[in-house]
Length: 157
Image 1 (cartoon, rainbow, N blue to C red):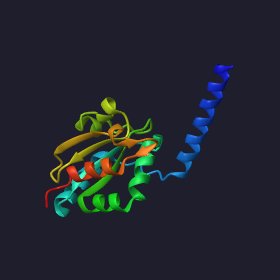
Image 2: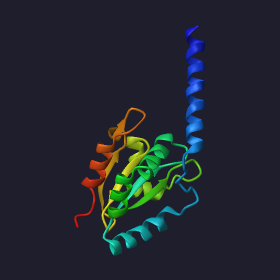
Image 3: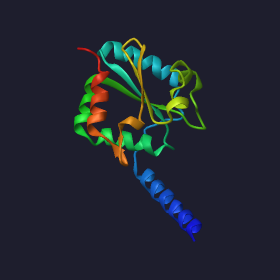
Image 4: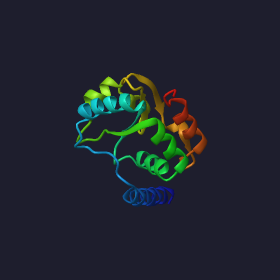
């Protein structure tokens, strides 16, 4: 029957996603104190003349893990990030929703889902919030769209 086929299909897709998730790095730290980490990043960003790229999400979010993996394994993107940004994975999970910091950032996950990106300048001023869906292509991300996004909000040097 169509119903049992779709249930089996759904179960197979879920299992495939879990297997993929298991292989990917887990960059989010639920035990991190987000308020003090953000203060440290702002100090460091000023000293290094870099902006802060916040990738908000969690280790539970396959698209968050895919994006991290994509940037880490794409030298061109990794170079742009390392040159221009302090990159921070801001955790949002049942164990730690980091409500104070998310509130400061305007609760972007509630509007866009996860991952969501927030760019801060060297002074900690929010200059952009980016929905990740527009960066997607198929089951991954578009090199050109991600590159354009990273370059658009890099500090002017």
